Structures are given as structure tokens and as C-alpha cells.
Amino acid sequence: MPGKLAIKQVRSLAGSSAHQRRVMQALGFKRREQVVVHDNTPTINGMIDKVKHLLEVTERVDSTR
Image (cartoon, rainbow, N blue to C red; front, side):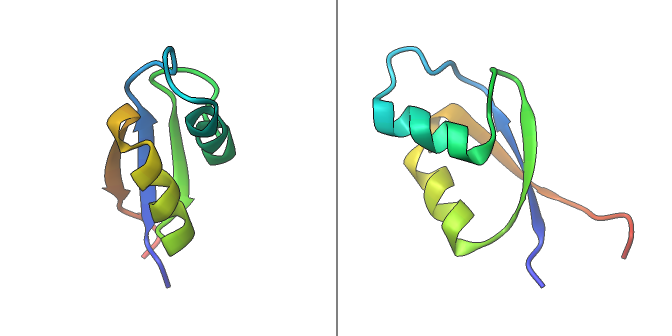
């Protein structure tokens, strides 16, 4: 079972390309300093890699284990 990633947008989208804006929207971001949680999958990792300069990624520890 894949773990979870807590992804925080730390930089603005000002000056970014339309492709990068679409990736951020697909990840669920609407504003700077927002945090979203996703499963640690190859698809999400590829999206993160495209906009890694705008994000801060940390592993989320589930308290339900």
C-alpha cells in the first residue's frame, strides 16, 4: 500500500507556463501555502517532478496504523 505525501505550494504561479498551471490545478492547488495530501504513486510523483520548484513535499505519517 503506498504511503501518503503532504504537498505544500510554497511559490506563486506568477510567471509559470500554462502547462505548469494545469499540473498545479490537477494536484488540487488553488492558492499559495495550501497543503494537499495524495497517495505516493508514480503518477503523482511525475506531476510533482514537473513543478518541484513551486512545492515542498513531505511524507505524511498515518496515525491509524
